[in-house]
Length: 525
Image 1 (cartoon, one colour):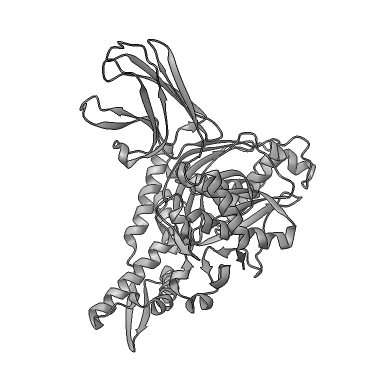
Image 2: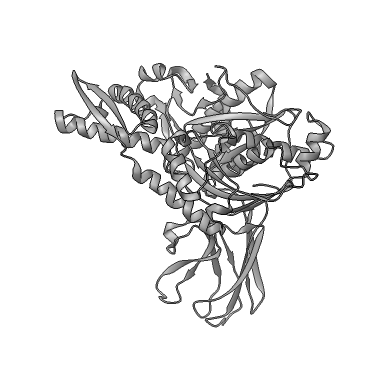
């Protein structure tokens, strides 16, 4: 979270859940109730599907019927999975559109529809999976800017969902309430990403204990598994693959989606595939047990990392549309011994929490009397949050056991409460070294190539004849705003260098401005 000084622009402030399959936008009303703002179709959620039409006409969340008559190469789904991937782009009207730009079109649609109901929208908190790394977070910020939003913060989805849960129960921001600290587990299985988080909160303090997840696991994977399973049966019988015909595939995917929902309630569901005059009916049983097992393993791991057993939990909270599958609830009851809570509406909880977080930031502004009643402002101002880092931070060093290779030396392990600072001593690796190059890495692997390099800096002009093994002190600080600061000091001559790792990967200012101009040219429906 970015708890640093936030600049607000004139206009409405909202919270946005930019989801893999659906997105939503929300605002805290004057009485302190988070309200999801309905789109132009009077629906609380908008499919995160972009249809790039002819002549610069863009449709966000088109109907299935509309999609089925389009060239599939013009339909972009699950773009969130590509956020931060610099090698992914879509060519449209001779322009390369990045994941940030395509996500910006979804945000533009949400903003546009909301403005019809609440007036000009200026400021937004946008949510990301806990497990998004710094590069993906920067891409999300960029998408907001391209869409014409002042992104005042990026907040983790399970943190947002927990805020919504505690706030809607009337337990957050109420220093007068004498209630015991509560421990809850948030299980968030969306269309494309999965997170599980353990949180402790009292009326005025809210802290994350542990988190883990997978940005490539969600309801989409359940659907694709069914599509692949049934297609293989069809190929076995008729020697043809129905997935190769884009039109047939669309209809087929929709039928598999319906079968997935039915399969949630029954152990067996018949599904018929029609392709090139041939029909195959398959009795579909559960073919996705391993996917559920992956979420179960992660849930058990996070409980262990938090030092919490199922019996210590006050609540298990479900978030994300894929938690409607009854098998999820059954598995969670086995792991925790508790029936999961249905207090939150899974599809809108994250957007509601983002709106609450946005209102907390707004309430801290000097002279911010704004739209909210005094009692609500008082509640908002009294909430403090403590977060954890979702990825380990380390530096690239020479392996002491094998001088020919480099390793990632972790200095701040993941799930460390932030802010946090650590200093460690290292030594130079060769005599007469003239400079020290420090690479800061994000990730858990020992191999630096398997981590994300998020910044580097150099100490230059070292004293002559510096012996091998001269001491160097490296300090890494993770502040409460989620910003990373690194400093290195050569202790013989006391030469030092430092850097603040700003989210500067991805698009540069020039690229952003070009995309902002381009986004204004596109008419989004």
